[in-house]
Image (cartoon, rainbow, N blue to C red; front, side, top):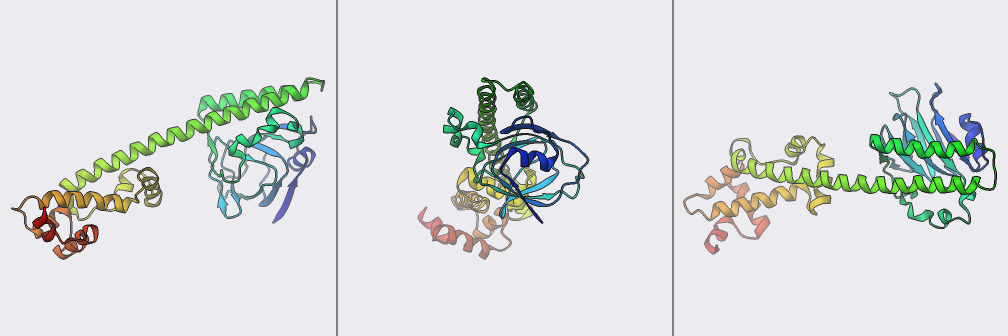
Length: 296
């Protein structure tokens, strides 16, 4: 496995076979039939890449970088990225902006670069763009590229840096949209989970048994692991605890009906044996169902 160092624009452009139009910045498009090789890249540059296919796997040490087609990945000086070819994609395709930190020295962008947190190591999630956002991203890149093909004059650096700053500000907006959208989706999923759980306890548990995390994850079209993490993030409880809380609430309601025996209640809730229900109830409340019923 090869270690590759990108400390200059020249080194980056030579590695990928791009022409250098400016010593400190490049706008590039990679779509050649050139197989990707596994390597570790040491970045001394800032980079934003719009991935047009998922042609590789990226990782920071043991942390995988989550990205997909038509997403933006971002890297900063000092970062070390391991790249492994994706077995099902022969040739990667991407468009990118790469610039040396010297380009933004003594500029407002240089002084405020830390506000763009997507460059940070802790941000290992790509920016997922809508069709309209992709168009904006490409338009700003095109403006930078036009300036790179213009003869260098006293305005060149200011115009390039201002357009880079414009692009980074758009990325901030797009990330904000991404997280707001996710929060809305997650809230909707938890609401669906809650409704399905109540319906299950009321009408299916007696025939099908106790509700499981896997059952509701499948109904919401997620893996059990991801579903559990989503519920934990949104409610502060893991999915199993969420189910147990609803079972307990249903049990307490049923125990208020003196005509129902403990065995009948345990059957209605999906417990295979009454003693399992008694054990569950005592673990949740510190009392047996009978003790709870007497004190209710």
